[in-house]
Image 1 (tube, rainbow, N blue to C red):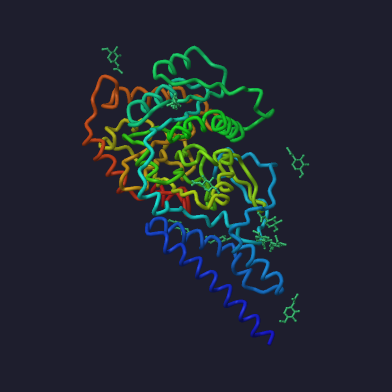
Image 2: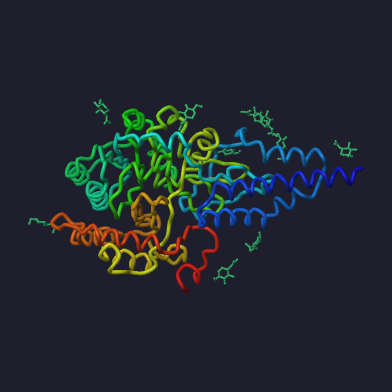
Length: 426
Ligand SMILES: *[C@@H]1O[C@H](CO)[C@@H](O)[C@H](O)[C@H]1NC(C)=O
Ligand SMILES: *[C@@H]1O[C@H](CO)[C@@H](O)[C@H](O)[C@H]1NC(C)=O
Ligand SMILES: *[C@@H]1O[C@H](CO)[C@@H](O)[C@H](O)[C@H]1NC(C)=O
Ligand SMILES: *[C@@H]1O[C@H](CO)[C@@H](O)[C@H](O)[C@H]1NC(C)=O
Ligand SMILES: *[C@@H]1O[C@H](CO)[C@@H](O)[C@H](O)[C@H]1NC(C)=O
Ligand SMILES: *[C@@H]1O[C@H](CO)[C@@H](O)[C@H](O)[C@H]1NC(C)=O
Ligand SMILES: *[C@@H]1O[C@H](CO)[C@@H](O)[C@H](O)[C@H]1NC(C)=O
Ligand SMILES: *[C@@H]1O[C@H](CO)[C@@H](O)[C@H](O)[C@H]1NC(C)=O
Ligand SMILES: *[C@@H]1O[C@H](CO)[C@@H](O)[C@H](O)[C@H]1NC(C)=O
Ligand SMILES: *[C@@H]1O[C@H](CO)[C@@H](O)[C@H](O)[C@H]1NC(C)=O
């Protein structure tokens, strides 16, 4: 009797797991995502949580655990605002041994409803919110490329986390960007990089998001060292989704990285619940952007997708005219960590979009490397002297050829086995 009941429970658990697996298989047609999904499963299995679960401790425990796994609507978890500062994604830590699978780790992209797919996309254009510190050369490059490549741009909002300098003021004026200066006294004493970043992005959202979303305007939130390499617009970037962002690179992460988040106007009603703060779930600290998981879990009607990503492993004169080559060399010479052997490249997951973005890693701050003035000037000048420059006209066919080349590269998410041999060839 007892044996048969245990067997029964085991079969139920297995069926639940198979159902979850099928759920992923069905909604994921994209093989890259499938691979990642299996990696997540493998990761979870390796941490023996499911195995542990299959070993019955007591009937009540088993049922509790099943309940906690399948209870998708209940998002209340023990949570603490007492977060660990993790400025570097790779240092995101696991401080406890969770006993259940947090549904937050299994979240997958959500396609828009059929109704949304058929509806006409909002045409209110795109407002870009850019976050800079004091590096005006970098700000100049970023604002310049935005004006050049963002097709349906309606506004540039520059958020500065430092007192305004005359140079920054000139740069903003030259590119018709509105300046917003973060009140420094709103930072907590001794706030680290991630805390500051979180505070200013949340501030920007609370200050300006509703105004744009209410006009049917999408918003792109961008870190100061992320910029476009190809023309893009809000309609194809979002492709009917409510949110498109770069997934945070931590292995377990299923939430938005704070440095690249595009929000559709459909978020107007719920934007007050969209928070890019850090958080804790089941003893795990989540870096900046972690609280976007709460939004996705709470609003099951919100559709979202992750950007794809890769790394430029070497210089290439045929890739955007080699305008990034100096910086690619700089990164490979200065980063000893093998997963950071080149700039991170974010590309649209949708066929309708040619969007490619460059992440000039660690360029906005000096916490990892000091003395980056030369690096910023060098990429600025090389872009301005390339066909992107103000006195040149770029050929669209060159851009498309470069975009196709990027789309055919091996996708290298910051995920999985990032050994030097695999990523950088030794
Ligand atoms: C667990 O199951 C056994 C037999 O099926 C039963 O006797 C026992 O009361 C159950 N324990 C609890 C806590 O329900
Ligand atoms: C599985 O996890 C153990 C420790 O948690 C780790 O040492 C091992 O490398 C992992 N195996 C794989 C294949 O990831
Ligand atoms: C599952 O959730 C219930 C209710 O929230 C809780 O009492 C129980 O301890 C949880 N089980 C585990 C294994 O965490
Ligand atoms: C599941 O969610 C319901 C409400 O949504 C809640 O009452 C119940 O306690 C939850 N169960 C567990 C095991 O957390
Ligand atoms: C979720 O479940 C917990 C118990 O685990 C309960 O206290 C809480 O009210 C539930 N939340 C919702 C939204 O149902
Ligand atoms: C963090 O939590 C500990 C104990 O839970 C508490 O003593 C400490 O004051 C908290 N720190 C902050 C900054 O809230
Ligand atoms: C929103 O629309 C109103 C009226 O059309 C316009 O006055 C306002 O400038 C727009 N706001 C933005 C941020 O574009
Ligand atoms: C999702 O549903 C909520 C109501 O529960 C609504 O306010 C919100 O606008 C919807 N969001 C989207 C993106 O449709
Ligand atoms: C573009 O041309 C103007 C006028 O000829 C010149 O002043 C400026 O320096 C040039 N800019 C670049 C980046 O070459
Ligand atoms: C990671 O990749 C390297 C090189 O391809 C390989 O030697 C190593 O066994 C891999 N490690 C795991 C845990 O898969």
